[in-house]
Image (cartoon, rainbow, N blue to C red; front, side):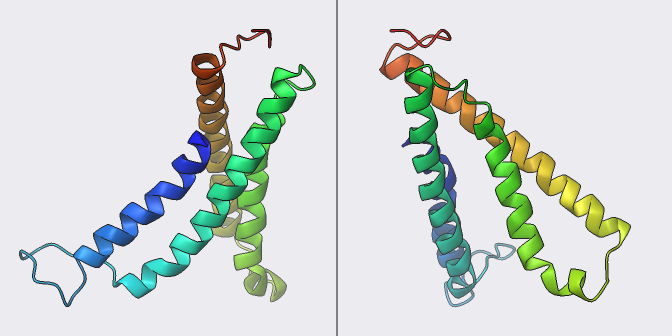
Amino acid sequence: MVNAALIAVPPFVLALRSTLAASNVVRPPGVSGLPPILTLPLVYILMGLGALAGWRTHVYAVAYAERKSAGWLSVLEPSALGLVIALALLRNGIRTGAVSPQLLAFLGWVALTGLLIGVVLRFTALATMWVVVGTRATGTR
């Protein structure tokens, strides 16, 4: 639940901020924002990713508590998912042969960012289990 909120809440904050700072709203000079219609796809995508993160966290937490898994595969999943999404977005450029060093650097950045997100989500899940359930590193209560 905590990891789902870590992924799903920021889109709501962004949408709210963008709505309040839209061009048809009176605001102080220098304050800008995206029109709300441009934030909707981001909200939908990140809500889906938040639900996926919550579900996968639950799966790994149960496996961890039952001592079936150490849970480190959960760190690799966001990286793999990020690469799949990036490749899906860039498929037309890749299909036409527009592979460049910048594209490879971008894919490397996506993979590293996914790993960082995975580490944060893993330790958030472990901290939540330690606080709520009392599970320690050995998987016992």
